[in-house]
Image (cartoon, rainbow, N blue to C red; front, side):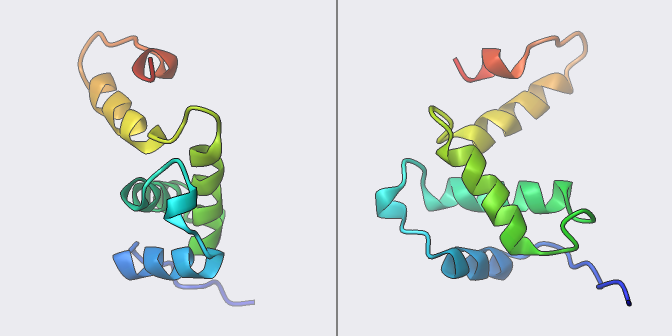
Amino acid sequence: MEAKHLKEFTDDMATTAIQKLGIDFSREKFDEEQFRKGIKEEYEEHLKTIDGEVTVAAKIALDHLRAEGAEHYYDHLEKMEEEMKSPGSIKTFQQFIK
């Protein structure tokens, strides 16, 4: 079996995943921008293990964002990653979401 050529993430890939999963943002606690950030993050983090399947990345992001109190999960993750680049930073993820 030949390995798939793994693609760089694009906005069109996110749009396709959103349509495929039938996400209705008016019924969710998170917005489309947050979901697109999540799809991109999960796609890039799990690229090889999900074999480039953007829908799988979207399902992972959906699980994170639907968790209680996590509708801004990817904003918090981005903030935490930036903070952790600072020397001497020892904050935990829980400190960022408070």
